[in-house]
Length: 170
Image 1 (cartoon, rainbow, N blue to C red):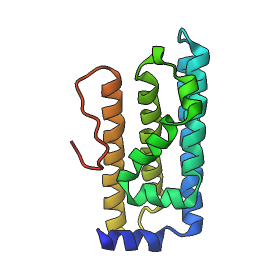
Image 2: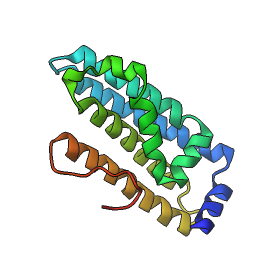
Image 3: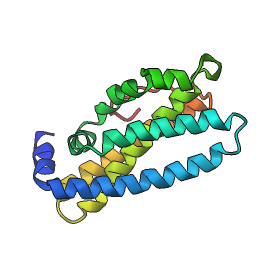
């Protein structure tokens, strides 16, 4: 594992990280528009739109930092502290009163996990052909983050799923 981290540090130059951030931002924008469109048909559209706005803003601030992007691409376990930093704020609590139960937390996790999966996929695309080991690692990282996303969605649907953000396949 140490070797792949050294390899990623070598490959992920400042310019390459900026490219990955730009690619990730485009995916986030597309996802935001799609979710906003879906939220527009919900009964409490203002609350859901405020939730989407807040979560995308916070996740966007996180992924737009090159140091954080490096963490995303090297530590799949970074997701828990980032998630906690989003849902434990007063702003989040003001949007998501008790009547909404755990649904807002599921939305926050799906946005975060989906964005981190997109970031790993963008890195895989940006580094295509540069290192077989890095490609294999990033492909596995995409799977890990997509697993978090699938677990959060399943949890939100009420399926008996244990969402454990450990970075390991469950």
